[in-house]
Image (cartoon, rainbow, N blue to C red; front, top):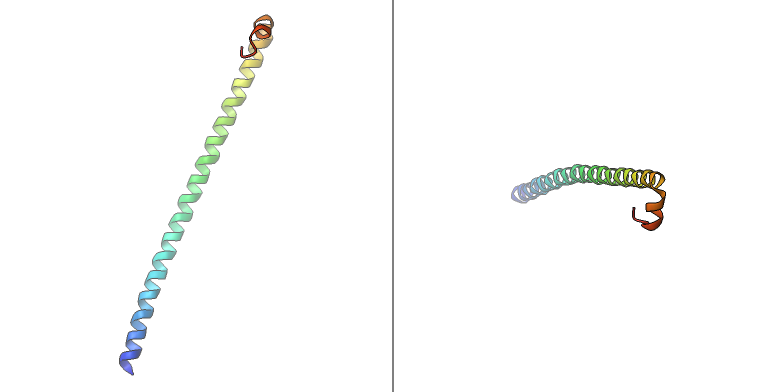
Length: 75
C-alpha cells in the first residue's frame, strides 16, 4: 500500500509541476499580448495623427491655391 501511495504522490507532484509551468507560460503570454496591444494602439494613433496632419496640409494648400485645388482634387 505504501508503494501505491508513493506512486500517487509522485504523479501528483509531476502534475503540480506541469500546472505551475503552464501557469508561468500563460502569465508570459498575457504580458506579451498586453505589450502587443499597446504597440498596435500606438501605431493606430501614429497613423491617425499622420492622416490628420495630411488632411490639414491639404486643406491649407487648397485655401492658398484655390484655382489649383479646383483643377486637381488631389492637390
